[in-house]
Length: 539
Image 1 (cartoon, rainbow, N blue to C red):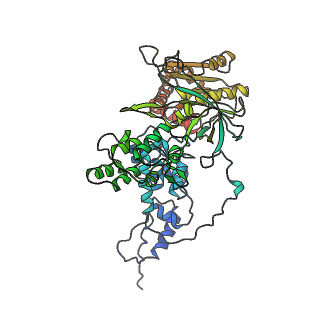
Image 2 (image 1 turned 90 degrees about the vertical axis):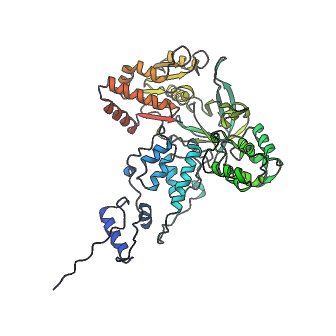
Image 3 (image 1 turned 135 degrees about the horizontal axis):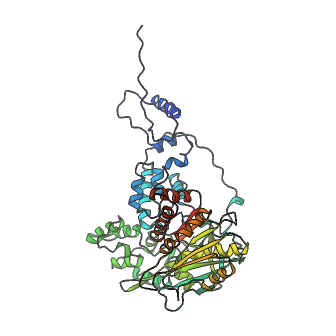
């Protein structure tokens, strides 16, 4: 008797799909029964399609992202996307984020990108540090997600709507802010400084916000009134034009962002102009830079670049991005000053052409918010940036400029609870005679023993520029001894340069004084990060 050998079941589910060998074999057999095995042009399912067909199949394990090599805030977007090019769309979405885990979006890069991928978050422009570059990439990836071929309908698990009582209390998220009161504002720089830094305090009595050291504080700013009036004049529109029950002036004041000019604004311009100006508007809307000035275009500059354009005020407002809150590291301890919260804020001012540009939140805090003013605020819980639970553990804090903010909070906290652990602060700025923030406080802490070591770096005091990473190398042996004794190292400040330079210095110190090769030293530092002994709050 002749026996017919069955044809092998075709592999319709890709190897990258998040299934075991047994699951993949069963699914291949299942799908083979739904299609004609002799038909041509069978297209294997994508990982996302295959996962969706299970209607809530287990998500890929944490290590399915391959260690997330793109999760490095110093990498340019192009490099991050390249490192994720062979990953599923879920991880490409994460790679598009700025990788700072700053909380500006309301969570961290992984959670925010995952929410977009799963359809739980529709706002694609919440990654403020990534700017327009990230927003464009996220939108492009979201379009790919939306273009995924429809899958057979499957029963979805019922979703139980949360009871009203489970809604987070006011001030616990950007979507449900509380109202605090400005208590005071004083300048920290002395005469002769090139910087303008402010110590701003809030009274929390009216909102009863809870925070711990290491958390950040979200502030909803308002736009500069002078800029608002200039935009209204450039539009040649009535300031009291009604928009959603408010006036144009009111919406421009606190409802929309006036910098940078979003792509949608240029898209709007392309609809109401023609010829070369339409081509220019379309190019700018597509992220091109025909005149080499795209990075300098805020909303007012964009209007002025297309003189004579008069968009409908309501359409104009709809083309702008919402005004986002800004996050600042908290520089106070609730145990040391209950009911109060402090920020350390660098004011941003710079000139482009003949017009001065202002940082919307920093100048708001420095000069537009007055003592007694109510401000919408919230606490953003820290992601892996906190004092050790054991007060005996020594800590090393590296925070030049306003990066010292959370470490002032750490020191006040440890002083308040009488923590026996040693504390070492590296602080740096331009000039010692005018840029030494909290000088009296830190010197008093040094005298009392709260601050075990204070290492200072000044980049403009002499012919040679000295930075915190230079001071680290000078005291490398002692720094290594602290690490060998179990110290946790913290870094706060600029992500692109300072944080990277500090990490390079740390690798060199570990190699030199820890008797390791450069590769072993880099691995040691990586392990410090994994175990929570190297924590960063960078932006």
